[in-house]
Amino acid sequence: MVMEQKFTRREVLGMTAGLLTAATLGPAGAALAQPNAAGRLIRPDRVGTILYTQRDVPSRAGIWNNPSPTMGYLGGPNFPDDPNDLGPLVPLPGGFLELFEFLAECGFKQVEFAGYNQHAANRGGANPGPGNPTAYLEYAKTLRKFLDDTGLEAIGNHGFIPNTWPGGPGGGMSQADYDRFHLELEFASILGMPYMGTGGDPTSSRHKEDWDVAAEKWEALNELARPYRIKIYPHNHADAYNFLLDGPMVEVTEDLNTGQPLPQPQIVRSSSGKRMMQYYLDITNRNLCVCEIDIYWAYVAQHRFQWYYNENGERVQDILDPIAQIRNNSTRYHLYHAKDGERTTQPPGVGNGYNMIPFGDPRSAIPYKQLFMEQRAHGLKNPNYEQDNAPGGAADPGQSLRFAKISARNMMALNRRT
Image 1: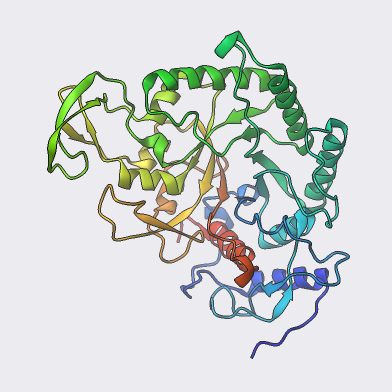
Image 2: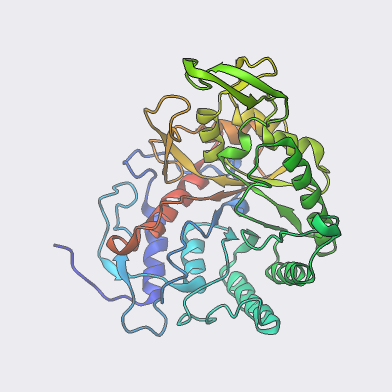
């Protein structure tokens, strides 16, 4: 039977720090070596997370001034070495300040926002929204103080990207988009962000012509952001590493993934074999346009997109190498989503091929050590732990925080010498 105990917020945070000091790595009990600062592959000040991973925390009322906080499990004295050691029920953090305090205790130094909303009962109150610019920017100052008080840096945000842009459809940018975009840039500047982005690809289309338009848009947005010293970035999912449709229409007789004969010939657009994101990188200004790559989704793309039809209607195989992709474009990928994955038994082209897990989990099939060693990530990149399925919902409201604890420890332990 688990005993329910009452703790203050300070006691909970102190417990967290003690557990981190005592714990070894890996939710399945595989003890990894303690971090060696000289050989660390992720610099201590670059250990980050995107707050989408802990999105359940800002949205609930926290411990402060709350007689009935949400109760959950943050792990006992043998966690995370023993994943079944959940510890006692304790009050769970809520809102940005308490989340930042928890993440700082875990060892995170950077956070990437996924919006700015929090429960109104938490310190700082509800986000007044861009409809009230004065209050919105005051709210930004409050969030900045929370960051400063906890020693965290805001590295970026998945937020507003306008549909119109200078030189875009109709000849220019709408006044509403212009005003909102500059307001968001000012908000980001108050937070101290060097980057501001979105959770999507430059375009969802596969056609070359649409990527040409997307390149113009993202260059224009980066020009607008230049006075703020902020770079605007897209975020890549698997589809961005599919093959660009840039060739003539051709007749094909074989299934793209299996090579089996089709019931009847089909007419499709062919490809040169260039991947869409690579085309974007090739045609945009390298001094303006940077990207955030989600490593998990890059490996999903490796699984899903192995074949294309050439201009003769023939199937051609080309398997994506995410490590080479980053190596060959090392000055363009400024941010990473360090999202880890366990391999499934799905055959190539079927499903995603991976399931999401905490960073550094022993089940991982993504070679993060090799990736960071080859990309010289030490001091150059900004890896943010992400796990879409981290929140445990009402059944386990502490899960995203426990997974954050596991992932921070494993990021800090990633070492070229072990």
